[in-house]
Amino acid sequence: MPSMNRSRVAAAVANLALFTWALGFSLFTGMTRLESTGPPSPDWLVLADLLGGVAGLVMIWWRRRAPTGIAVALVLMSAVSELAAGPMLVALFTVAVHRRRRTAWTVFGLSIVTAAVMSLLRPTGGDPWLLVLVFGVAVQAAAVGWGLYIQYRRRLLWSLQDRAARAETETRLRMEHAQRLVRDAIAREIHDVLGHRLSILSLHAGALEYRQDASPDEVRRAVRVIRESSHQALQDLREVIGVLRAPITELGGPTLADLPELVEEAADAGSVVRLDRHHAEPVPDALGRAGYRIVQEGLTNARRHAPGAEVDIDVAGEPGGELTVSVRNTAPPTAVDPGTPGRGLVGLTERVALLEGRLEYGPTDDGGWHLDARIPWPS
Image (cartoon, helix red, strand yellow):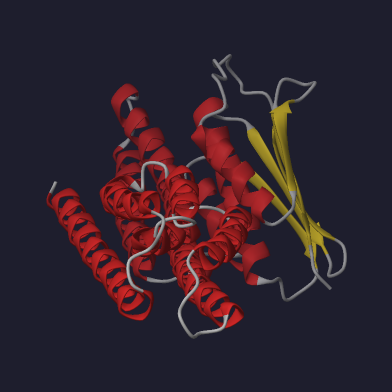
């Protein structure tokens, strides 16, 4: 609202300034003409001059509503009314500011013709006709040129503002996209880390609940695994939260070198796991982390959906080829509802896709489940 009021005040001030200038210019040219040649003749020309000047000053206030029409009318009136010269120049200036260049030059061409007509109808006393015409055309050209300059300057400012607005929007969208990527990466890390640990906790806690006949040694062993897994889960969570302050490219985590520890944890939880590694060394960090998370997700899903099943893990690859990771479990000893793929597999698919690899998973012919990934290994 305040900006709208400021715009109205600025427009009123501009109109008043142009009205004052047009009035002064018309009076100056009229007085100069009277001193040099006396009153115009015949009498109708005197009346036309006065009416044209008054009408032109009134039309200045509405010039922005119809710039071209008012400019053409004032240009035609200036052929017989010297007092209309001031308003006519203001109208030429307005057309140059608010209309296309072709329109401005067309109206300017018409003003040259009317200037020649005025010079013929009312010649000056001692000045050559051509000199008077050239002076009038020069003044009109200055008005049009100044108006075009202001139009080009406004367009330049508008284009710069538009570019700045678009750049700001693009920057905001890029920041939002980067934030989504970071959130997705953190969500995948938290799921992969805690899902594995919590599945071990759930398995042993369930065993303590349903096995009332467990021996003290078995209870102590289960409690020890629960305590160690809880402690490790807290440690992993602290590490994941710690990378929130680091760039996404600096996300750390276990790699393929940590697979033996992962398999040992699964064996302590009661799973039968066989690991076969025959890949080149060293493995790039990004590939190593992805391979570790794939194996971890496969073991977690096997404990959840196929308790008691045997799991075979095969990791192979070399530079210039692919890193292949395969996690397969046999059918569970007792029927278990496999459920539907959760967010873990979705996040794992996104992780592999970021490395331009592909992930496949699903049931096997013998009632088990397979999780296979193929990721390009740069040479």
